[in-house]
Length: 126
Image (tube, rainbow, N blue to C red):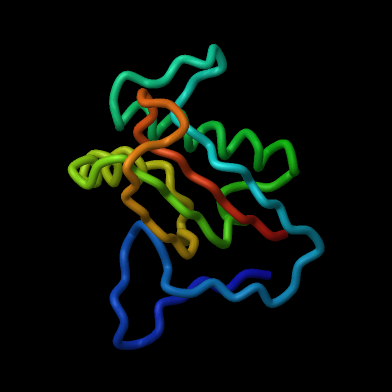
């Protein structure tokens, strides 16, 4: 059982919750960083497409473990440029579960390939 919350007096966002309490679970899933590439290995053309691809890859892994987006308790998102934040948020908002997880966003100099703009890793519990 998960309880996602924002304590009184703390900010809230449609993109994340301040806290996620795991009150009981049988399984945990640690998902490696997923990047914005398709099944052919080619990166998306821009941050919007790469965000959609990375989220799709993440959701495919969840499905493989008989989980879904509502089971995610924590994500860490890496972007290569702070100027990508607005477009990332627009692209990602439509894919979020009704109660988004605790999230950390980090701006990094680069990812594993110069064509990659985003990487998302996650922890899920069910």
